[in-house]
Image (cartoon, rainbow, N blue to C red; front, side, top):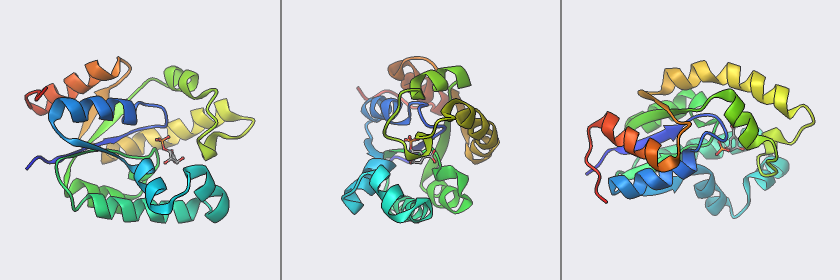
Length: 172
Ligand code: S3P
């Protein structure tokens, strides 16, 4: 069976969009970790943060990483914070390879400027916050990743690049 392809990176880097294309091209099933958690909890990520707090959400993320790492043949689109926890990295790596989607900061700022869904970004100093968080997180993403993928191009193009990097054939 096919190893899992695990997409990580900053909010807005295209984990879900590229994940969808990559799943189709590689003959895998896409699992979006945030969507998985929302389904399990029957609540949105925003509701989970506001009712139970971020640390409760982080525990749910580790439970999701544990459950998904038992499966194979998946493209897993992580949340932006998932691979910051070494326990999650260890769990996920057992099931496949971790790919960092690297999108330049100005493009991320543009994509995230009007976001209303991500609880961490609902603050007046959003731009500065993103800049600081990005600088803090990039080294950790790089540390977790087996591959770093330049990901500013359209989803289909990035998905094809990933398959080439991995030496896999397209199935569709
Ligand atoms: C988070 C990113 C979000 C979601 C949650 C926390 C983060 O996922 O998991 O809001 O800590 O960066 P996306 O990267 O899919 O937005």
